[in-house]
Amino acid sequence: MFRWERSIPLRGSAAALCNNLSVLQLPARNLTYFGVVHGPSAQLLSAAPEGVPLAQRQLHAKEGAGVSPPLITQVHWCVLPFRVLLVLTSHRGIQMYESNGYTMVYWHALDSGDASPVQAVFARGIAASGHFICVGTWSGRVLVFDIPAKGPNIVLSEELAGHQTPITDIATEPAQGQDCVADMVTADDSGLLCVWRSGPEFTLLTRIPGFGVPCPSVQLWQGIIAAGYGNGQVHLYEAATGNLHVQINAHARAICALDLAPEVGKLLSAGEDTFVHIWKLSRSPESGYIEVEHCHGECVSDTQLCGARFCDSSGSSFAVTGYDLAEIRRFSSV
Image 1: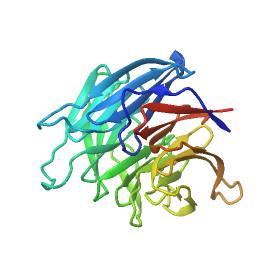
Image 2: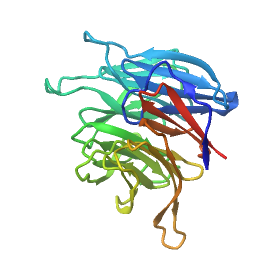
Image 3: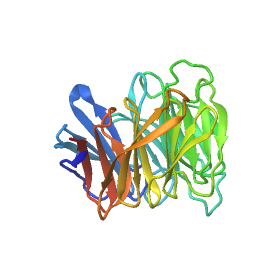
Image 4: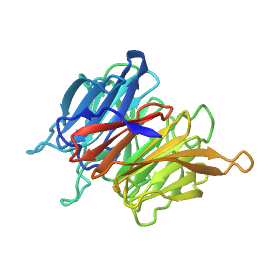
């Protein structure tokens, strides 16, 4: 069971964007950072364990070429082996900051040369893999940035071409030194999933075809791909083969966010039906097949959910954001 804890106030509503919540836990400082996007700005908040807000500030998208302020599409903390960077994507480019958001260390402007006059240009989908940060784009390409141990000498090292439609989300997990292990998955507006092996050169291992609906959110855990779709379903695939093992009719409307608690294999799903569900993923000791168990369901009434994240790696607390909701709602297990 989970109970509603003290909410964290926002200066304004979260934008109606999928995956519109990022959480970074700092146990050494007894702090949790929250990041939420609204229009041309991103709100960064820090809170004590009881949800007491300690600090709040706003980041704005770098304007680049254009008249109107660019809209931000996502904010996400990337935990690398040697540093943590805050990545902000918009309709103009990609901004990378030190984890507190005070110092910008890199700016990458999007090249709209290939886009048609009626096509929106944007970046969306952010994940860290080893010492790389991967960011998706409107064209379906995934930009791979090589991040140094410190300083601003960030380099665009590779562009991955596996998709034909805009990237929606990217998920990664540590490869743990194994060869031929799928440790990154990318999703797009057509529902196509591409499974990759990271490294000095990223390798496309397999494609999992879509079926006519977008895949707004994807997660990866111990070789299991969890994909949330626009029809409310969650599919669980074997990353190594792309085979579908489990299909869950999880929500009555589109899924807007998935998250994983890696220590325990708990999957969090949030949908536009106002519900948040928690599932337990595992493998059968006999067959090795993927198994799933429903653990909890929570209705956040009268709210169009747009972001949901666990607040710790053990899955004992989570937070959600909603459109036209000027707060981050927190829930913890009892």
